[in-house]
Image (cartoon, rainbow, N blue to C red):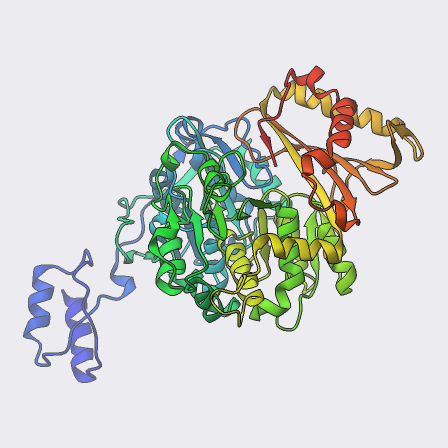
Length: 611
């Protein structure tokens, strides 16, 4: 009481405005009565941060788990694996053990996720370990919700030291399915391999976890909770991201399009995280009809669906867009909101074409690019459609390994504006992640710009029209991807090693059916910014006519191995641009299956997904 009295005396001598917080554990009934007796009725006292008890940190003994090596997008396993004692805690503590103290001590971190099963329990674990390791403050999306693009946006806006993303992306959710965790750095981009390798090394030797002894945080209510030297702030998951989108796009242009009686739009949130963003952005801000949103409530198991926006898993949307009286533009996003699919009436835009078309139209349709893009980039397996745009627009161009982190250095160095991956990821340097909502807004902007000034009753420029116009200018890169999910890992690796051996014996001029080999290699990448080298990034067979066959093992699954086979062929002849991709690529697909002996190694007679 003496210290409080002294504090009151000093305040009474110089009475500024102060506010008392009755949530403080040191503010007893006596303290409150004392403040009421003060002669200044507006004088209220807040206990200083030093009045809080010292944060109690417990050292919890633990043992290492095998297999905690992160893939291209963090650590992904089945939920039951993460529910093992200290499994998640080990990885989080290993992360803090891998970071320089100045990267988090007393600093600000962001935490959010896609709303899947186990996120709420995981959030409490992460918060307590962050506090235990000396983090000063953590921002958490309400109910633990923050899309992956929004986490990147919040990190950048709030100048945070980094952030945790709780998601297994496009993989299924629920007690029997997938969960994942990754860490993004202060620029908002995924942690580089130099850090993820250290995390893995530390998981192999971890012996203790530093965890603060604080109660679980109510993540359902906005506001700030103080725990001594540590603060948790629960924030609205949409506001910072929406504010950023308003600086990137011409919202009035999109409003004008969506208000037309002769234009209809539909968005499938797949019961995933973008359900939390769709209404505030498309309906409340842009004036779309609320009925345009389907599967708009985020659910822990994504409504028993597979939140992967492709022709196989977004079947409900595909049926609508290929049915009678289809909307003019259909779109979908995935579990954590970083992927997208774009459809016109009975017309599918491949992700490779999508990023190329956005890049070609960005300067005219999107204010953020009013001075033109700085440069363009794609992942190695993505088709060369973007290469054609970069060449005609005379822009710097980069080919990088799969994984969004490889784009980040180029963006930070001012070399890159627009980039994409064939795996339904598209984005720009407004953040350091791919961004599903951004891609949808980009397409709405392009369609809006193409139809600006057209009166109701005049024929609108359609999604298909935009694609055909693009191909007539740049040529068409026929492209398809075959996914063989949850293959036996040992057999999948045997196939890859067989192909590596075949590549080692191949030479230019070798005949592969009717195709002549230009070169074959295992793609390696040297970062032009920091000189870092990434090897074994995909097996390529490139032929004299520019056709390509590529094989990769995906790092985004949680069980078994996913073999991805990519087939591409360039066609400059506009009279052939309407041919179905599977028809145009059939000879090359058959060659790809023959070269790899995929069925012989895996027993698979057909792919799980064809894109």
